[in-house]
Amino acid sequence: MSHSYLSIISVSIYLLSLSFLSCTPAKNSTQQEVVTEAWQGRWEWEETRYVRRGGESVTNPKDMGITMEIELLANGDLKVYHDKSLQKTYTYQVSKQEEELMLTVNYDKTELKPTVESGILRCTGNVLEIIGGYNDAGGNQKYRRMK
Image (spheres, rainbow, N blue to C red):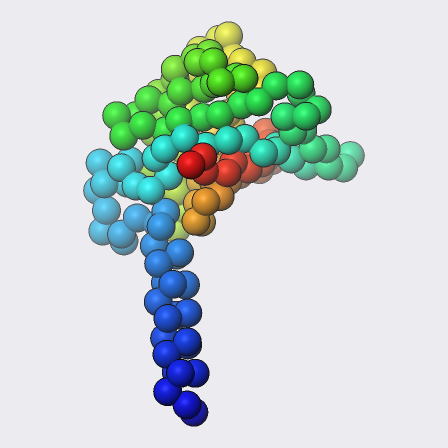
């Protein structure tokens, strides 16, 4: 193999490994370390998929006529913005359950529509997913990191 081909492979492997580290906590993380990982920041809602026994439905900002952004802060606050205006501040926790991270949002009785699901938290690069649709309990949400 040529030297340049090996260099390309080495760089590709390095970049791929960085993408896996972007949102994954260390195996021996404490609760505080888990909460302060790379999913912090501001995220723009792209869609929510509801998978029900009768089929699948998709809701997005165009359907709702409203944009939604969320901001996950290191202190455990979750801010929800509709059309760039702060609507509500909730608290959240991230915990590790077996090999998955679980996002739990603490709501009050006056939930916003659209709102943020609680569920399995997955973050790769600039995409944040909350898998809240297990057992028909909620939707699977997809967000894109805001720059």
